[in-house]
Length: 443
Image 1 (cartoon, rainbow, N blue to C red):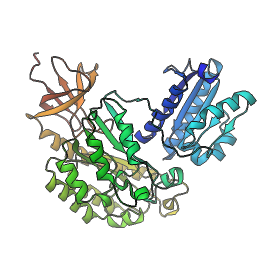
Image 2: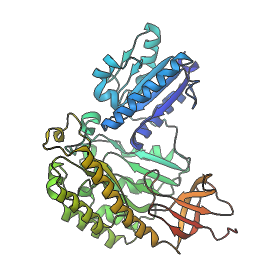
Image 3: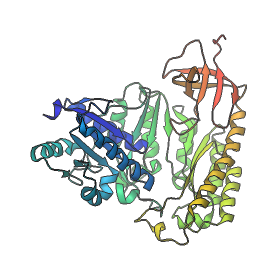
Image 4: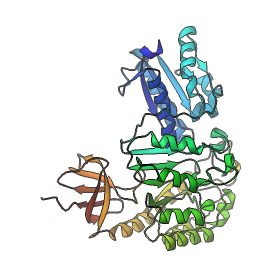
């Protein structure tokens, strides 16, 4: 019966959640289910939720409520999966009556059983925790065809005091190396494979008793269908000489690294239960640049953490100047229940947090603009992502542009194909993007 239903799928949150959604879509396809992007036509809508921050939980619930409006038409069932029910299903089942089925982060294969039971008994179903954390190869990409994410682990055991992830996703669990290599091989021709996990750099420690991140990268690099590899979510305290050497010498690994530093001041870092210090961070950045001169380093920071002083905020601004990072994301601290930081006092006022985040963005904006200005007049390799119809030109990314989180390169060319690389001469820059043209372009 379910194979005759038309499914709609919504994925919220991070790229790690996106991979889970892609595997869920793979399960639906294996069972012969048809999918639609038009929710007004769907008979069953599956919403893979995020619960990392209060704002994410709000978005997830609002999405469920919006979809419930379609029940006056074709929609019969709403399935809520992922982080939100995994952590809060007790509250949701009692209050979110618009949803018909709840599944947690390891219950995706239970979707058919849960739906069949919901249809048969005409009752809402809570299947959270009834599945098993197995490995699934089935996957339908929702990214551009030439880009794919590879999620190499789930969970986390860093236990940062502001973060709910260990309470939602559990302890760190690496996926078997052979499975990951097979999954990557079956993705088809990929110009960029983006490695993700809550903490990519601890790969293998839990199942092999030793860190095998570099070995995984070496195995993935041997795949003929993968042109380049990008590294995200590399924790600073685990970036050692072996990994730096691999990035420096492996031609398939883009000279780019995302390192979530989260703060720069030692007292706040200690309260966050982060294992680094300002001095260690600066030493790491210097080492990376000595070994890989062209390395593009991206990071994220939290401002307004409980007890953060104005002096410590100013210290973070000064750190940005010294660190000279390519790009950064800044977030106002979100007070999350069931975290250690929730109980810390004093909490920073919301207006102060937002002011500090805006100031950090302004500081980084000038730094990024100066870095990008250095590319003007140079020729760089750009992977074409498609056409920007508003700007009436092609759009792509250089090695220092990760999908969705960094800037882009807008360029004119006689012709360009998605997923192919082109040499673009940069003519101008702003604080986020570059603009140029290929040699064959004639105005």
